[in-house]
Image (tube, rainbow, N blue to C red):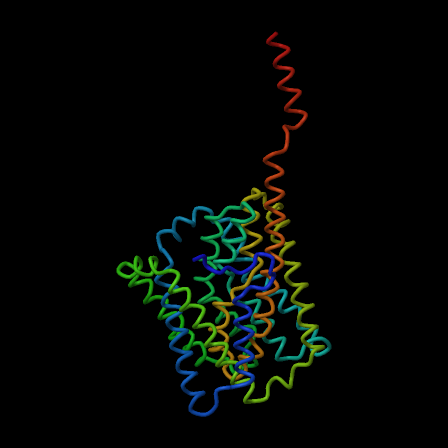
Length: 346
């Protein structure tokens, strides 16, 4: 029997539909009382397992080999952890006219999250870019983000980030960094097992994220936090995120050209440097924002779907352009040189 596949013409990622369904489940049947305690404990364990698997999957040797292309990786890291946060800080002027303060906190947190790995690789491959560079760039971003995102949140969000404090930083270390390092240390023995069961463990990854979303949005529903968001505010948030994404896509593409990267490298820079990881951001938000996590992750969820749709369109365009360049005839100058050479030889 053939496996059912998501229609290629459908612009919405099926996982986003699962996330939206989880939000709807939390709205109708939020976890309360003892059930909320159980969900919170399960969410904490799931996040720790998630980052343990990240550590077990990341090949230290491949990461070190990728350092040879250091200019590209520095460029992607600068886009992810420098340019993005600067745009987030600039959006502060939109409060309270367009964004409420909680939505802005979530937007600023979005700009601090590391880049994606899987979708960066997929889009780079689709666009005929430098896939090995995209793999290393995404891996480096995820690795750096485990440390950089909490530190940036501590400095930029401060006490207004939903209760961010030294205790939150300690939770980040214990819940994210320690499991990740444990996975790295045990990779020698379990790395092969993890690699062979990539599909099953991928389900564990996504299931963990769904549990985090359910827990966070249950808390928001119980506390009545959704009464703070109006359709107009949501529309304003979408417009602001569209502008940020457009700026980053243009900057990574033309900035790569200004830095004299080749076309394949520019493609990797554009897709790795313009996106944000939902998988890494949601667990961090649940630790950093606590009861306010529901509003904090809303901008990230919207941005994630937006970047998938837009980057899919761009990747297909880049692929067509690359195919056209390969099939294009030789330049006139080259033709004249060949003709001239033939004349002299005659």
